[in-house]
Image (cartoon, rainbow, N blue to C red):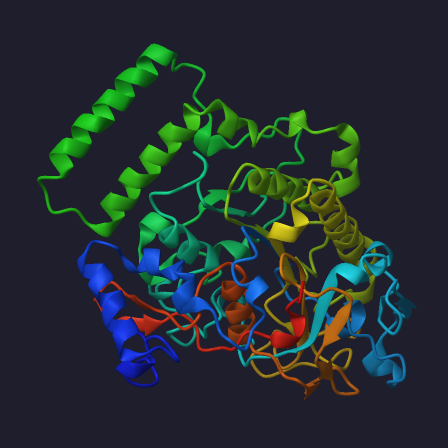
Length: 481
């Protein structure tokens, strides 16, 4: 059961007149669904926000550091705190005076002029697989502790896919997620994370998921590869058979899952018959020097794949950090043990290299001004090394436990004011000390930049109107140009 919308019907379009609301309803009667209204700038701009930033982003790439990066060891160091809080790492100056980040982010230190570093993000969910829901949807999970994935709030990408349904710019799916599977990299906790799909918007809007490792020499996206034993003639026969099945299905009561399956079949067929779309998945077409710049590892090549998808017209791609299987005590960014060893050897260097390369590459291709990039995890880590928390998994002497009460999210690209730090944590990096930001505020900012009114309501499967987002766009990170 979804939580009821706070407020009455008059909040459907905040600040709009009754006449505007009735006009919007009339458009619906004329056949224009809410997805069309999502793009209506006349109903979406807030007079308090820079007009030039609404809809500035044509695409979005989310770099999701699954596991929870330690804020005080990455973006928000506390060099004056006692050793058990500040840890082993030291801050380094960036190319923006007054902004320092970790010594293990040297490349990103040279990119600070492009970054909006938000050091005061907070929520209350200490569990990995449900806290992801906060950052990917801007909402707390509807059912405490989990519940069916279909009850989730929709991911940003699903909302964009619904808005743009029927007017796609490419044969590629509008919403893609990458979760590279690495040999011996189990367990695959990311697969059970909430918030990564369409939720109650329905399975037809779920992302096209790529679990293949793009760093492998034999990389191909298995879901869209034409089997070797299926020639063009047989493939055409299968397409005609699919069309026959579709005709029959229209005369039957179809469930959402059947409709979703049909939609995915159509998507796969369109991909297999669109050469230019298929080329977006061919990393061999990239200059080897560019591939090396991103990093010859799963994360680097996955992010390069995301850039190729943006260039080909995909609206949103989420790249989840992979479990590389290099240790058995600390997986993903979940550094309950070996916090400092793993951060400085296998986590931060790869992230530093890849995030930096992405920004440079997007800029060189003229895509940075229209592509929003988000770097985040689902939460941060405990202020004190070795500190355990209620609901967490504990921490070893050299580890940090889960900590959702204060962490850092970084934005860059379209409509973002670079070279700034927004908000601040207290002296322990434990709680926001200034300008606290919720995941819902981040969601409102993301929707604003992507041209979606965060105050809009969408109907769930039962027809109930649910407000897309209850947060407020973060004025301080929005550009003025």
